[in-house]
Amino acid sequence: MQPRGVSIVAIGDEVLYGYTVNTNASYLASQLVKRGVFPVRHIVVPDAADDIEQAIRGELGAGHDVITIGGLGPTLDDLTRTVVSRLFNRPLVPSAVVVQDLLKRYGEAFPTISDQSMQPEGAVLFLNQVGTAPGIFLEDKKLFGDSRLFVLPGPPHELKNISAQIFPIYFPEPKEHVYELRFLSLAEHDIDPVLRQLQQQFPYVRLGIYPSYGLVGVHVSGDESLEVVEKLSTTFRRFLLHDSTLEAAVLRLLLKRGWTLATAESCTAGGLSARIASIPGASDALLGGVVTYSSQGKEEVLQVPRESIDRFGAVSTQVTEHMAAGAKALLHADVVCSVSGYFGPSGGTQTAPIGTVCATFSLPHKIVSQSLFFKGTRESICEKTIQTLLAKLVLLLQE
Ligand code: ATP
Ligand code: MG
Image 1 (cartoon, rainbow, N blue to C red):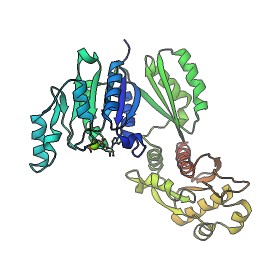
Image 2 (cartoon, protein in one colour; image 1 turned 90 degrees about the vertical axis):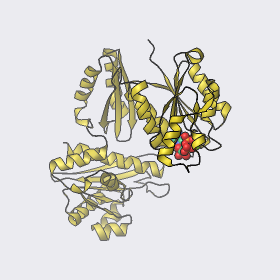
Image 3 (cartoon, rainbow, N blue to C red; image 1 turned 90 degrees about the horizontal axis):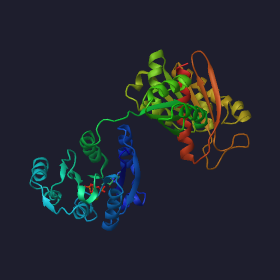
Image 4 (tube, rainbow, N blue to C red; image 1 turned 180 degrees about the vertical axis):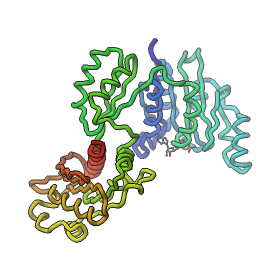
């Protein structure tokens, strides 16, 4: 049997024009994949009744389930309920359950109760526990066969509240489990040949590779998944990330060793320590960070010798080694990570062009320095730098 496909239809000019990033679609899609259901389309349509109707009709007609996002509120641009009521020939009628719920939570004076309680006749409703618009479930075998329609509100916390009610009922626990493995500091081309080999050996397994900076994710599902997961974990054992994020792994490994950490940052300006500080309990290991953006700051705060900056340049491993030593002396940390780089769009030198990043990792038993190079915008180079440093820290700490 062909597995059920799901189309996610986001409704709204603000998403279409790029003012709002479609995080709801990525949330829903990833939740579905976790349940072994694979989305087939992401569609975005404007706040225009014809476009909304055409998209929903087309996708239901193609045999897909449809989940719509947004346009359920009481304002003039909110058309979703009107459109689905027309599409399914179910007039909007007041729902006593919704009226009661809204009265209980918002009181008589709430202005839009009568509007918000109008729902397609006979629809299954899911009360919104954190907002006003309920989620709607509709199906009609005569019109759309087995295809089903789920209508969700746009505000992300409301969408999560209602999808958490809907998923267990209509997308029950996965028929097939999807294993997610994440590997540190490996590139796509390190893993791809191994995946191709495994695909040949296990033709019924479904493999996906999802690279991002500092990490590459591999999804494994289908028959013989366990064997494949086992083989991948063994082949790349050293690189396997066991935590939900890189920063969580750094913190866990520091605590395991009983080591403290400090950072000395130039180009990332505190971004690295901020990532680690975002983990609850970070203060058990993170002692602090020093941001020295100027050469003078590096000299005066971290005692980097002027000659070293003049001779090797502010972006050099010689300088980051001095930065690490300076921060270690200042904060008495067991581990220090220092970083200096040119993120552009101006600056850079002949030997260290824009995108060059130097880093030093000073550990109790050794000092490792690295020179890296990233392409991209100022913002993206910064993001890639921080990801890469965190990944390298994890690898060094688990050695
Ligand atoms: P409301 O009752 O608040 O009007 P609604 O169901 O009508 O809710 P929209 O008006 O379409 O939803 O969107 C409300 C807000 O939800 C938007 O301003 C935006 O911040 C957020 N939002 C809408 N769609 C998305 C989306 N696809 N991804 C992320 N956020 C979204
Ligand atoms: Mg709205």
